[in-house]
Image (cartoon, rainbow, N blue to C red; front, side, top):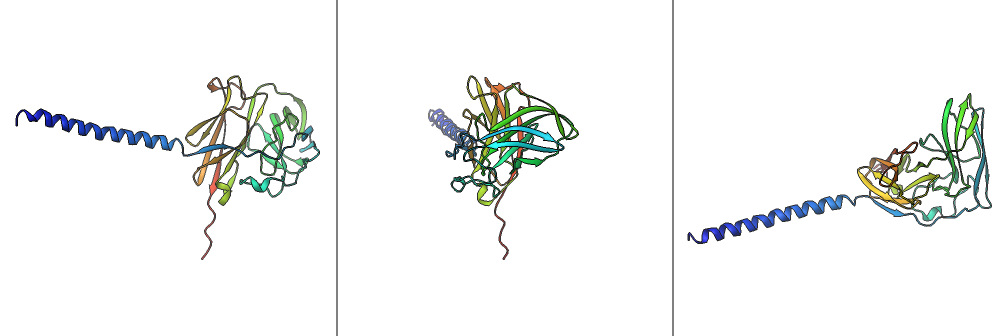
Length: 260
């Protein structure tokens, strides 16, 4: 019996070790699963507007005016493939996204509109959007300027040469079916996602890297408030450029429970 004691102790140690190893393995699997709680997938190909153009921005007496041209693109019309997109769509149709100082965009469905901008120096980005809020990512479909504003008028404007990452969507509140696939869309100016440039998307507490400029479907976000932070990266660190990073908080809501 005395000789068997060491053997019993060895067997006990092996069993205990196996249990601890199993516990660690389960913890690793749990962490791995949590890393995959949100997914990004490429947006389906969209209606193309290669000749869509926005130009000649003026701001006088608190009113913006643009020239919007294109053989097929028109403000206020539904984009033909809107029903197939499975994401939020504006019933008012195609529109301009107006972004001042990388704040939340204002949707404008006509080429001339009133919009209050305080006196001072501001960065103005305007780009053409489809009815489901996806930006048209061509050189002619946007205007980017630094402007000086006084008393509701642009008194000076100049081009921007620095790379700029502008946040577009998600924005506001999504209800019911619109919460299942939420479109992530952003705008790049003076930069391409190559030569060390990438976009880091932090969705709540999960970080995902983006290497292609296109819209994406986000799936798996919880009901309630969600926050996305976008950062233009250069060689793995945040690029030293204006208005970088940029964050937005938006809300997902289930369909209201019908009254009994």
